[in-house]
Image 1 (cartoon, rainbow, N blue to C red):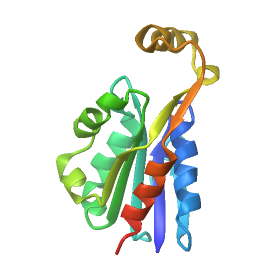
Image 2 (cartoon, rainbow, N blue to C red; image 1 turned 30 degrees about the vertical axis):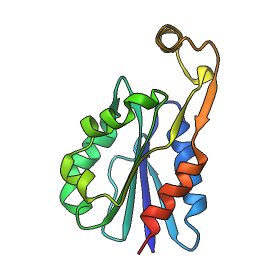
Image 3 (tube, one colour; image 1 turned 60 degrees about the vertical axis):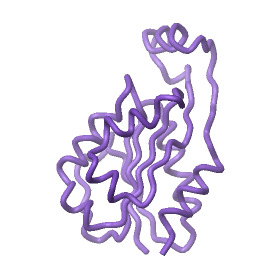
Image 4 (tube, one colour; image 1 turned 180 degrees about the vertical axis):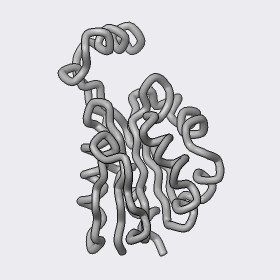
Length: 159
């Protein structure tokens, strides 16, 4: 199966998780596209599309939302998996519902929140200050959900 993993990341966590997904798709031909570097992706050659975004200020990144909007008809002709990375676990489902079109959510084989990180070394002063105020966290922390990544890959790979 030929798979495209298409994602955007604010501070690198979503890219890291996308790479973890790629490692677990044994036997697949996988091509990764970072929407921060590449705006257009030709979907025709792919059987499966995995879409990933960090959640920033309560919503998926605009590059991901724009990609979906521009390619929705084609995406609905493919096997699709959707994942997000964020640290506010209790709000992840709400943010997924708000950020991804219902028709795509209903079509997707799997939709998962795969954890998140606060990467203070990647944040600017304002971002660090906001994270400290909102979360109470004062240093970098990782809460990647590796078991959920495995579950996501099983679900998108199921026949």
